[in-house]
Image (cartoon, rainbow, N blue to C red; front, side):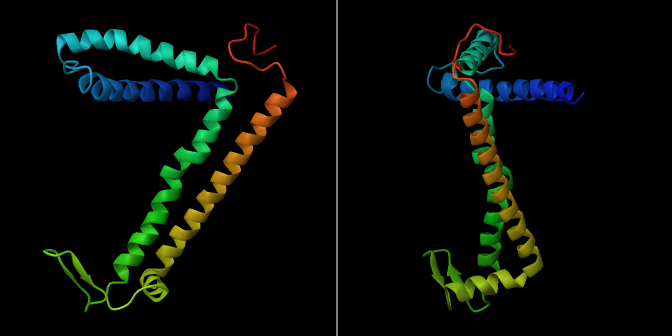
Amino acid sequence: MGNSIELVTGVIAAVLYGNIGIKVLYNNLGRDLLRFPILESKVGKWIWVFFVPGYWILAFIIAASVPQITTWIVLVGAGAILQFTYTFPPFLMLGFKAQRDAILPEETFDPATGQVNRLDGGLKRWIRGLKKELWWNLFDLIFYLGSCATCVLGLYAGFKTMVLSYENNPNLAAWRCSSPTG
């Protein structure tokens, strides 16, 4: 049952990501560099009809060319995608709130010159800023550290799986004709 649900959600995710990827390529590459018409026009729709199969053929070639593509996906997910979703937001929120909450009433900013007048700086300023919303900042810090731990564990699992795959199957290569299920 779990594999069936994973297969369906994987196909849905692939179609959605593929659709977004194709539109980004069409708009950024086709429209900007190759002077394609807008996608809503009749000619644009016909270009789209040929663009989509080409995109999926290219995706298949890349997936078939890279042995252990699923392990690479795990590494990319743990090392990059997870960071943008779970690690960077609480880290950036901590920095933003520390700077915002450290501002004293006597401190000024002149928008005409861009001149900032601060009364202090350094560690004292950061501590003052973080203490203002201490419990919320502690939550963000714990969330940040937990996401860093998840990143390390995901990378470890991905590399360990990749190493074991190559150790257990010395004939692992791209574009093999034998069945991957044995």
